[in-house]
Image: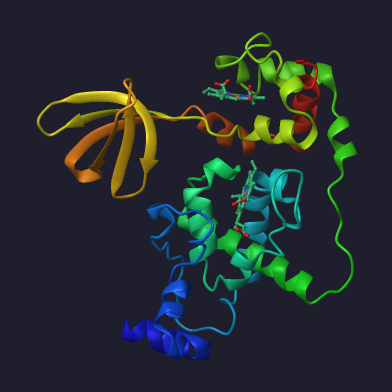
Length: 282
Ligand code: HEC
Ligand code: HEC
């Protein structure tokens, strides 16, 4: 604790006087999601005190740019300035207060699945590069004045339905879990940006978990809570159970991960084409 205090008191007078403020600084984004999983710190390349955030090399920034384009740009926009279904990261307070990737890293690793932000299983180096890219985009925007581009909903209507159907049935692998029949009506329940969001990363999809306790008892149910220490599930009767991870063996099946995998495969055209096709499933 004394170390942390020295670290922050250099920057924040408030933190030097007010222990509560220190706690808030150490626990970024805790207001965003009230679960213990955001409470743990993910330290990415922490190198000690730096002015606002770490200085990154152009290699890191460029590397991060391509990881971003492949995994994040669909939702957050190519320049991180906000996209069809993700917020503007250059205006994000969380990004602004992030010093060395601890806050951004936590969001990327844990996701906010109830809010439409997937979790990603990326290497430490990729995450650090992403952090470099996002910070450099924010620096750029902050040093500029002027207007930002808005989200263009008409962009959602530019796909080719036939090409989208082909992608859905072959390269996209979507028919492993879906068919036109099983998805029938989705385009009536959602339209425009919501439909795109639901297609890219459907919300509130429960994962299945099977648990074996030390005493040999087996249970199966839906995964209700997960962080690095704890697993919580609801069994078929709706009863909640939870265990420390080291007291059980468990297996989790996450159907929604197919969507996260798809994100890194889609080209821009694929997305627009598949969306055009999905829009026909009324
Ligand atoms: C399927 C759409 C989608 C994808 C893909 C996506 N995000 Fe997000 N992201 C969101 C949404 C929606 C939110 C806002 C969640 C909320 O309201 O708390 C968000 C929030 C965030 C935040 C927190 C912003 C804040 O101010 O709280 C960060 C940082 C972030 N995303 C980074 C990334 C990175 C890096 C990637 C790529 C590895 C990525 N996101 C991929 C949809 C997405
Ligand atoms: C491993 C299985 C799996 C794969 C592969 C998969 N999905 Fe999904 N998808 C799901 C699950 C589970 C849901 C949650 C809703 C449900 O159960 O239908 C879902 C939801 C959706 C929804 C929203 C449905 C609704 O009613 O809200 C769309 C649209 C969708 N997926 C499109 C796709 C597309 C496009 C692909 C291929 C790129 C794809 N999915 C691949 C499992 C999968």
